[in-house]
Image 1 (cartoon, one colour):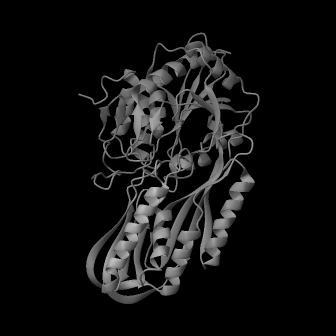
Image 2 (cartoon, rainbow, N blue to C red):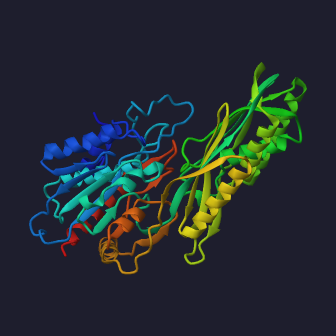
Image 3 (cartoon, helix red, strand yellow):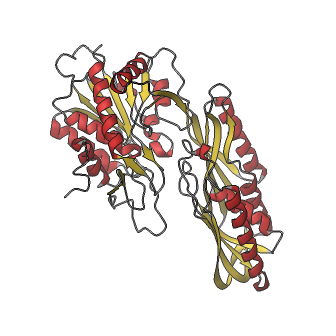
Length: 483
């Protein structure tokens, strides 16, 4: 028996469960891309699969809609792969372990990939339908959205004829998203040197953080484990002499870091001072983040006496300086749209190898000049410390379109169905819509989606009832797009 067999709409959840059986993390999309191609072949639809694994599937208009403008339905096939530390799961080969509780679908300790598997499931259910009236459809499913919108960047948009696009990558029922921030990944490479040392080896672990999406949840006042670790290591300088052996924090630059681990070397007489400093730091950050991220822990584990290579004192100071100075969180709120984060950054990945300190931040802003100025700040910090800086995956903002017949129609349909207007909002998270808006002249685009919580984290859930309501709304919108 299927886990989601009794969930409505049945076809949507059938295809969602099928997708969840296929590993589809970013950069691991060939299998799910081929699944979409096989679906197109089995149903007799024309399709395009490009060298990046992007897929477009074409479905002709139903009777009476032959003259209606084509509609592009768009989402991405890759997911963020995060899991709880206690969960054994190989995202490169294992399907997801689904369950239902209290009206939500989850993946039992891993990300669910509702972002954006639900868009793929909606699309396949529409393609598979025989009783839903609609204009000609171009279903576009891109790859590697979660690591810089790479599929959208590389797509040759000449394979699309539509000028109306419904993106299905939002996570808030009742909200129509009509613009978003642009962004980039800020990458720092700082060379380090090592020396031999001997002492007591301790593991410092900052954990217990909620994490979350670095765009849509950056305003939730949650902590970042890399930022907390930097503060602790700086404070520890005042209490004990120590050397840094290793460091690792975070896996995705667009996920607020939940855990960071640093191994240090200290003299035997300083072990208790380190533990006392950790207890003080934990108490302080719990007070600071009470109400938003109050379960932060700073734990010390003794690992015995060790002879090992540690960072040269100069390299150690460079690492500490970077961790303390790297910006994190909201940098500026919008002066034009109340409540909208304009500019933010998230230090999502930090890794220390034998000869390099590597760090990667997600930089977002709805103002290009502000995005670039924040990038310049990180570049200056990196180069000041003798490192090299690079920008990866820069993407434009999706600008607000004052005249949008698609938006007006979708608002009208929502009012007709629910007796109230939907929220029409600009968001801080990045969407592929900005790229398509730049690449397809005259594109009219709106984003929708069902309620999801804690995307990009192991606590991610998808609301079943919301999924059905949004499906009914999407079907009604397509029915109304006859002219």
